[in-house]
Structure formats: structure tokens, C-alpha cells
Length: 85
Image (cartoon, rainbow, N blue to C red; front, side, top):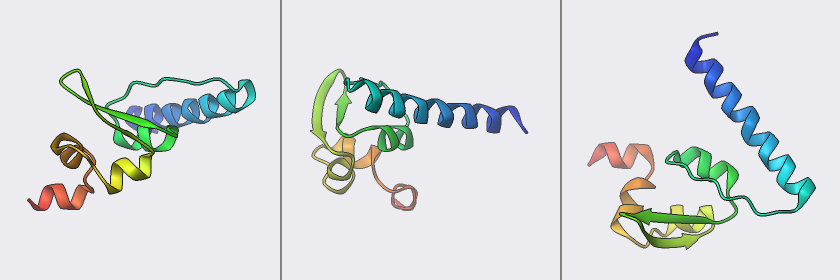
């Protein structure tokens, strides 16, 4: 297994462990990430920031389907639509 694939697998396992721990303990976690897939997998609520300012807060579906700011639209656009422009 390549280093990149091994790192991705470890990251996914850690995400599942964090979600299990959160459900067991019943506490709120704040995860800071630049990875859209990670945010969508872990979050029940997402805050999108641009230049240090919160520009949108919502569920992963709300952020993805109804981006409020230009930065949200470009960051959360489906990969095919952002490359097609």
C-alpha cells in the first residue's frame, strides 16, 4: 500500500473513531479542516470562513446546496462544475 493510500486510510479510521467517541460521550467537537470531504463526513453543522470572517453557517446539505457567499460557491461547488468554468 502506498504512503498516500495508507495515510488516507488512517485519516478515515480516525474520523470514524472521533464520530464514535462524540456519540458515546455526547460532547461537541470543533474540527478545523480545509478538506471538503472531511467536513461533509464529520459535520452536523459547518461554518464557512473567508479571510477570518464567518460567511455562512449551516448543515452540510445547506452549505452545499445553497452557498451564501461567493467563496462558498467556489469552494463547495461539485468538482465537475468548478473545472468546467
